[in-house]
Length: 415
Image (cartoon, rainbow, N blue to C red):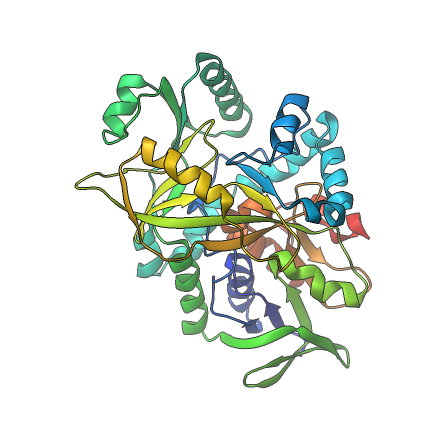
C-alpha cells in the first residue's frame, strides 16, 4: 500500500488532490457522502480569484464593529446564541487580524493566489466540459462615493505593483457602456481583469471529478467519520465496502475537525455560512460579468442557471437550520441594481466556508498520525485554490520538492 491514498471530501480541494496524486501514479479512492462539488464548492461567486491576495480580516474599526453588532447588515449576520461557542476562534481571528500579523498572512496567502490561474488551466487541460465553463472576463467592484473609489484605486495599484495583479478603472460612462442594463448610476468601478469567471462552479468540480474517473481513479460514496487505523494505514467505510490505503487526506472543509479531533488534532476551525439564489433576468436584460456593489454586500454573477445572488457571511452553530435573512435583505437592493425577474429555485442554497483564525489553510501532514494529511481551511478561496493545494500536497506526499514553501500552511501551528 506504499502508493495508495483515500481522499476524504470531493469538493474542489479534494478532487484536485485526488487528480494530482493519481497523475503521479498513486492508487486513489475519492470518498464523499454525496456527489462531487455538492458542499461549499457548489455555492460561490464562481470566480477563480487571481486578484484575491488579501484574505478577509476580522474588522478592527469600531464603527464597523458597531455596524456588525446591530445584526441587520446584508454582508454579515449572526445567531446570538452561537457567539459563545465561536468566541475562542473569533478572538484568535481578531488577534491574527492585527496589522503586523495580517501582513504575514497576506504574504503567505498571496503566494498561493499567484498560482491559481495557471494551476486551474493546467488541471482543466483535456476537458472540453471544464474549458466551456471558464470565461476570462474578470469581475467588477462598483463604487458610489469618490473617497471609496479613490481608496480602491490606490489599493489596486499597490496590488499590481507588489503582486502583479491587473485591473482597469471605469468611470461612470464606461461602466454604463460595459453593463448597460444596470438600473442605477455609479461613480465608477474597478474591473479586476485577471480572474476567470466560471458559469457553473458545481459543473467545474464535476468536470474535474469526471477526469479523475476517466483516468482510472475511484469515486465512492462513504462516511468519513468511520475513518480508523488499519495496521500502518487507514480504512474508511463506503457503499462498496471498506477501503484501505496507506495514506489518508482530510479535505472535508468545515467538517474536517470532526474527523481529525478523535485522532488528536483539533484546529480552531469555524464556519462562515453563505447563501445563494438564482434569478431570471427581465426581458432581454444581460449581465455581462460578475459585479459587486460596494456598500450593498452582495455579488451578482451571470451563471448557466440564471443570475446568481450570493450573500456575505453568517455565523451560526454547526447544524443550525438555515436562516437566509441576508438574502431577504439583499434581494430588494439587488432588484434596484439589475432587472431581476422571478427566482429560479424554490429554496435558497446554503453552504459553509471553512475558516481558520490566521486566514491560511492547513496543507500538509497532520501531527501525531503518520500517513494522515490535511487540505482544509481555505475560507473564501477553496474554489480558487483547489488545484494549487492539490499540486502542493501531492508533491509533499510523493517526496518531491514542493513548488511553494509549505511552511506557512503547516498543521503544527495549531497543535
